[in-house]
Length: 359
Image (cartoon, rainbow, N blue to C red; front, top):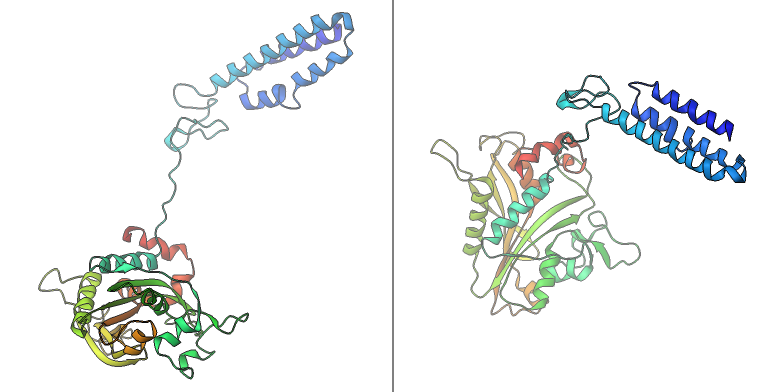
């Protein structure tokens, strides 16, 4: 009991002499898990039974004294002038020592942004939704019928070749879809006419990765089926899209984006065409991007082939329709004048942060 009293008095004297001690260091030394208060408390087991009550009161008073001394040191750690423990503060008044002012606002967090592909995809969807097109989606793993057969592609068509298509080894009838036209087939099979949809999504093709090609990319395809749909309806729809996506001339000095249609061939449309716009980089004068032609192809289109309508259970004698499909990467590259397709999938923050203000 006498030894316990001596220890308590010695520690009290030691604490009183600390002056402007660091509050955190004090807490660790005296009130921590292995601090002196717990050490002294452990001496209770050596006190005689008849003295345990008195010893318990002394130990409790010692603990309260130590806690009060800690609170006193902690309250002095930050003075009204904004310095902590007499040390200078950093920018914004935060202490450069071990005792920051927790009442100050936190450091701002950097803002992210949408991926440029997402920005352009959402823009495309918004444009066509204003024309009454709904958004339809489907699986990325497709079967042969929805991806090829229903779209009037015969079994010996080159697009079925292993060099172009990723097939699933577990089932030779499964594959990674090569276009979002498979979503159009699924919507036509539902028989809910008329149909006016766009089908955005990721597609896969077994191509060599380069600045102009990748093994996966993104598409938006459109489909409109009703009675008396004509090629003129298709052209006016795409004219509207180009004006809304690439902008109308703000003044007579600005060049208007020109559009032209070229005859082409697709198994699922007849007649078929490819649509070009005047190069946005050189203004149609000719550059390396447009291969000195002044034109850049952005999409394929045409009237839905009667065989496709019949394959999906739609009466081709009563209904007609048009379809179109574009690569989102191609539109994005033109809109933001990006020359390397691989930048979209490299996740380089230096590239992506440029689009923070484009959302």
